[in-house]
Length: 454
Image 1 (tube, rainbow, N blue to C red):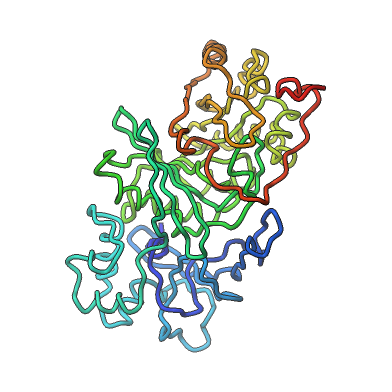
Image 2: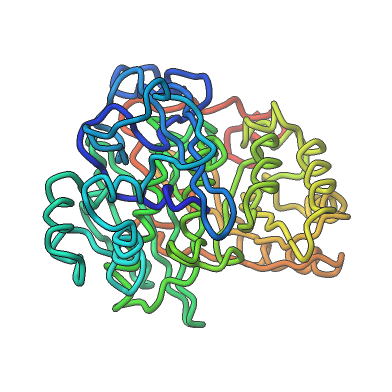
């Protein structure tokens, strides 16, 4: 885990054109978005050059990229304007003696150890500092330098909505005026989960998901992702207790923003970061197979796969990503990859849609589909939203479905709605607006289930 990554959370230095960790992809210059609209376009940066940071834990690296254009839409960490590279080495790859975070502190005349002291106040010691005045115990001159060259936050709090069951939905404004939503879910058993967003909107267009109606506006930076967890701890730990779990199940498809999601997950679990247990940080995907494989190779965090159907015909409709990565390919990839992971279970999420995927035959097919994959299954009650054409399965139907899975040897849980009276439940986040992603044609044999007729 790179110490340089940690600075990405909320620290932005000056307006130098060298920014850390801001290449959203290795080649694309504009993020895909739906629908086409000048406000929804987001200019990305050229591919990053890597700089290795030596540490007691082995080589570390931070990404420094020279942007093709600057953007105020992201929270960045840049090197200071007077930062000097050795002659002829600007923009090259370093393998030793990097120009990184400690060196930046040193270049301003302070001890490198001040960098670690700053990290502890940003992430640890129950401080989670958001402004210079909260950096207690730091050198006065060091704080003065930070006040002149740094900003300590990536998000602006817009509102907190409280549901009748105690679930909180936090609305954050970004630098470019866009809004994201984060959910904090307390539990009687002493576990409190923060559900973070990874994108503004989502490009996957899952038909049962309200966020999918938005299309994709842009990816979130690693800073904007991690800051959601920091804010949750800072704002709500006193009310709901310690935040113990993080799930990447808010707005967006995390693996569509794989670079920043992996960086953010690293910060969340690093002992110098927020220090969550990797088993308590779960990243969910609709099934982007290449990115899924990369995640399993590079991250120690838990994986969830949103399955939601037992046939390609149904999944092609409700989850269009299945048209590219079929069920058989997705599940066989998991079967093969998990052979090399010890004591690791993937979590399959299955949203129960009345008349669509909740039959006895679906339950039996699901048992066969997951055979040979170390897994748990969450049966999730569908949460209706404006314009939805689906209905939730009844409690009785969910129990019947669960019992069939359990009898077939599956580890299975039922997850009922939390926060739905504030549109904070699974699949309810976001605000689509007037331009929305298209509803897809319903297969003929399922039209009756939706009361559409034949």
